[in-house]
Length: 426
Image (cartoon, rainbow, N blue to C red):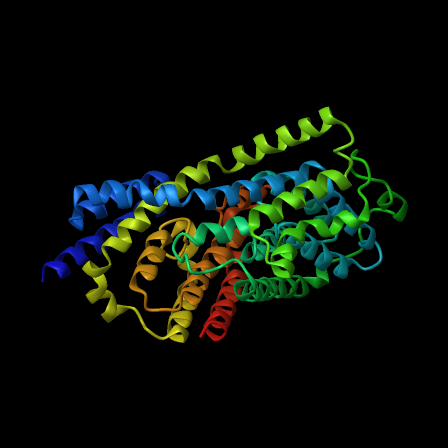
């Protein structure tokens, strides 16, 4: 009886946290408050709380933080050395003769770049190049923006920075072949949905207004990048799949190759400058994220300690069939909007913590189930995602129109990818 009462109180605070976040409350502060509340309500002993909730989880998460730092650094190096911009510019040359193909190619190039790149800075650097091209091809603002941000969202299924954050809840999930087969499949599904969006609006697409002569002119002042560098954005993933390298050495060798191939290691002073500048920008890009994730580890630890308190209630509510859960999450996927209860970097962190604590499902499936709405809905179509907000404001697009255009396609991608996870991880 006591466990049931405590379980109800925990669920009520969980609902309160969801309301707090959806009303614009500070999510970082919310995680810390929830960790304290669940510790107190759950009656966790003082010494256990200090060591097992507020200390050890954060210390244990240090290795993951390092992967996130190196991943952010690699993304920043790709942008600041000009590789990301050069890959983007090459897509312009096709747009004069084959505008529909060019539109699709631009989206795939964007997706390719963000398999390893991450952060609003990288998005801005690519957006200022590619968004004007998409609009010059005839796409309306809302379609161009949605196609662009969904193309950024799709590779988050394999982006090491994103995956490492969710491993906090599901430590048995390894960033390796077993997951990456699903990750690339989910990425492909979302890109096919982007292609569907483009084809539905194909009648508005026309030849680029630039002449071929104008297209051959470089749009930026950086030196031309050797074409071999075009494969480097996906090089860390290749090293993991081909040679089973761990993320940090794979990212380090990738950073070295980027700097070497782009000529930034020709002089000692020049190398120091680019290394120091990119490190500072990379850490600045994720500084708030790191602290938020550390508070999240504490909340997750408190959720695990309280598993027995709400297991009876959850046994009666949560379906035990992966396919049923996939269908339910697919129907409810828009609840990831506005940091809602299916957005793992928002109120959905509580959902993830509870789902992980129940142990009802294979960890790979549970991981995918909580990841899909976060990626295909929240990251790809929600205005609360920082780079989505920047893009919408940059092109002066009405927020409601952005949501009305993007959410149905993100919802479709979510449903397919959740069903795919239920099949692949059954």
